[in-house]
Length: 505
Image 1 (cartoon, rainbow, N blue to C red):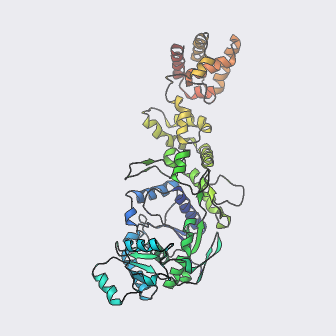
Image 2 (image 1 turned 60 degrees about the horizontal axis):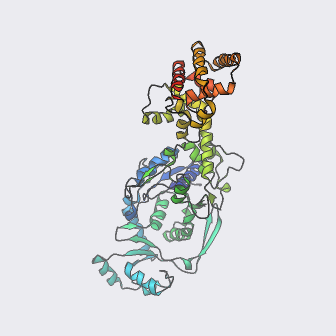
Image 3 (image 1 turned 30 degrees about the vertical axis):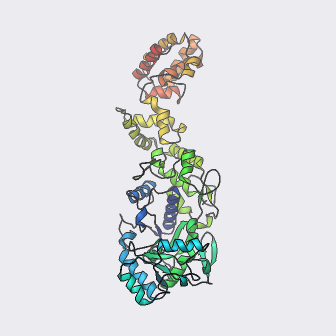
């Protein structure tokens, strides 16, 4: 009987969630939903030295903002918990004992200083079948000596006993068959008595088995550990229920070679974290996609196409579209260049598609920050609807629409020089009289009346209209002038023209 698909995203709370980790979570989610399966969030916090306060909350908030819904986890609960590895010590001890009792692992007492000394005299030293016989461990010591050291409180680790000369074959859904000889693997540490916690390798295997994970979807950097993990499954007698491995391509620098890093984002001006991060240790603040003004659906669409394609020409895809099309058959083996400019393009496209009312809700915090009140939801939505084609990110909406909410205090110098002459104030006084006589300020009606007046006076159309725009907007920019004056109260339009006559020299 085919098992229900169950995947897990298993980050460590050691800092903010990198955008590469976000893509891993997204691919897990898309695959699970595509196959009617479950998405589990497991917190891998066995490395207590690297734990960062607030990181776990950051992970949860990031996934929620992006619309990646978790079925089981620390917050959601579930039948396979606890979902935090530091709360599973008793479970791991049982499996450490099983490996020791079946001679699949052994206890090692070598101190860090002893290991460093060995490395200093043996180049490329590796703790394995060829060297373990000369080290301080339960394979070279008597049972009595081992027990005595443990009773005395000596710190130790448990190492996996890898038998050399065995070809280990891992089948990966993206990379196909990966073969490695066990002789090149070292006897990995699986457990440390110092903190009574397993290492990643043991905890990962035990949890994936007990949580009935069917597919392990993770970054390419974990590919070298796949043979070890397969050997561990075999050591426990779980070979028949071993998950299918999927190792995703790396996210690469936009410029140059190598893996995408925070430094790349800092240098080129784009975030590498989903949300803004305040480092509790250094006090440093790192930018996030949310705070930069990206829409979560645009970030999801952009990330999905870094290393995967839908098999057709589709580019703009909702989460439902992505779920419907997702397959590892269309994943690349090669790393994907992080084209952050393409991410900006996606955001522009999603801003354009966003209903004006929803944009208004996203824009209100900007008005609140600037102390601007008194505008109706309808007014805000219509203003943004006129300028959103000129915006890439949410903050751009203020740059493009500011004049709808606050009168200009200064005027673009180059436009003043080009568009404002000695005759302009008199013409603007005439324009005020024309506007005061218009009862219907709808765009088409006002435009006809004003253009007829300009023609009747023999004025230069471009000079008058650009001076009009300069007075109301503060610069020769913005949408159609009469669309602006239809939305803006007539009294405000006239007040701004009078202010410009008084202030522009």
